[in-house]
Image (cartoon, rainbow, N blue to C red; front, side, top):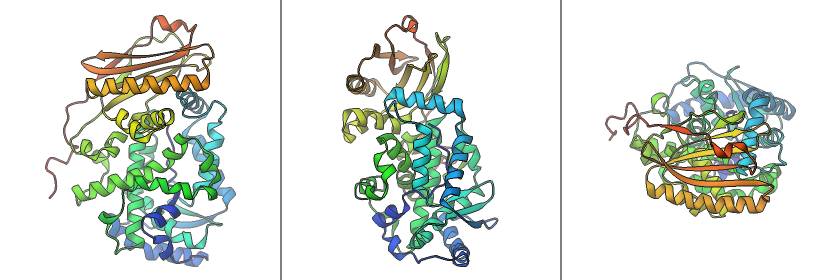
Length: 423
C-alpha cells in the first residue's frame, strides 16, 4: 500500500530509550521560545550528523492533537482517494493481511494520530509539534524532524511518496528518509555514541511488547499494520548505518536510492546491483481490474509470518524474491491473481511450498465460502514464477487466467556512482 510519508516521529521515545538512552538525556522544552531556541541550537548538530547544510531555516509551530488528526486525515485522503483506497483495502483483505471487517482508512488514521509525535510539512517548510507532547520528548522529535526538513532541501519528497502503485519501491525510499533521520537523531542527542556499537535496529522492534500498554491502537492493530509502520524507521536505520560505513561521503539519494525492500533487507544485494525484474499483465482480463500493485519481499515476509507463525521461516521462504505483481479483479473485488518471480529454481520451489502451506491455513481459518485457490509453479522467459489465484469457484476466469510478461532488469551492476567501493 502507498503510505504517505508524514515524516512522523513515531515511536521515537522507545526507539531512543531502547537503543541509546537519549530520552533520558533530552532536556525538557515547554514554552514557544524554548521550542524555537531548541530548533536553532540543534541545526548545526543535524548538519554534522547528515553532512548536509541547511539552505533555509524551517519554521516551527505548535498544533493541537485535533489539528494533528486533521492533518493526518488530509494527507491520507490526498494520497489514497476513495477508488484507490477501496482497491488497496480489497487487496489486503484478499491476502488476509487485514480482517474483512477492518476499515483501513479509520484504522490508519487512528494509528497515525496515536503515533505521530511531530511532523515536517514540505508544503509549508514547517515543523509541527503537538501541544500536548511530553516536554521531555520535544528534543527527540525536533532532532528527527529537522532531518526531514533538511532532506527536503536536497530530495523532492513528494516525488518519492507519490510513486503510483509502486508500493515496494516507495517503502524502500521511505526507509531511507526515516532511517537516516533515526540514525542522525542519535548522533545529535548523543554525539559521543559510537553507531557501530549499537544493536541491530530491526531487532529492537521486540521491545514493543513492553510498551504496548501505552499504545492501545498500535497494540491491537494487525501484524501488517504494526510492522509496516516501524520498518522504515528501524529497518531503514540499519540499512543507512551499513551504507555510511561502506560508502562514506555519499548520500543514498537520487540514483543511489534503493529501489526495493529486498535491497533494504539485504544490503549486499544493493551493493551488487541486484534489481528486481518487472512483471506486466498482458492478456485481457475477464473482469474489471479494480487494483494493481506488488507486495515486495518485506510484505511477503509478513504474509508468511502471519500464517506460518514463525519469523525465521518467513525470512527463509521469502529470500530469493525477484519481483511480484498482483491484480484485484471482479465487480465485487473478490478475485486475486498474484505472480511472484524468484532468483532460481530452488528459491521458487521453497516459496511455492511455503505459500501452499500458508494459503491452506488462510483458507481453513477464513472458511472456504465457495472459493477456490490454486498455487502453481511456472517458468516465464527463463525465470522461475509462482502464481496464486484465489477466486470464487464459479469465476469465469478460471478458464483463462490473466497472463503476464517478464521484463528482465538491465543487467546486475552496482548503482550509478558506485563504480568503485569507497575505502
